[in-house]
Length: 147
Image 1 (cartoon, rainbow, N blue to C red):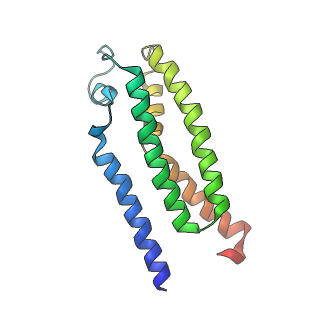
Image 2 (spheres, rainbow, N blue to C red):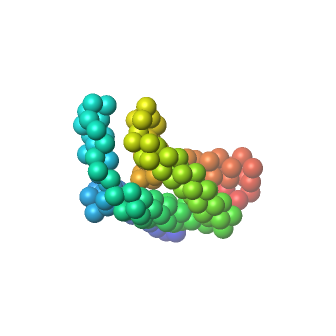
């Protein structure tokens, strides 16, 4: 009983860490944040230090990914879920960063919303919101003895 409540508390604290990363997003270099807040369809793209931008996206993505994988570990305590999540996050990062590089390199030409949403997937912990219910569903429907 206490272990269950401790796990709930720990998952809650980890989610608060994700909120903290979002709250302190200003420590990461991202000139596109203010660009997308305003009338970006009628403004030119700001000067971007691509190396610095991609490094900070990498840091933010993997900080969110590590916290998300810890959430998955605490919630399920299954090594296979953690291993799958690591591969999922790594493959998703490679695919998304290549697409984002292409969109940024082309100055978001006719791809404003596409670039906006790719950036969102890179800087926000959205994948944990997909993986948690998927793992829960798998646990309940394909391995009911482990639930």
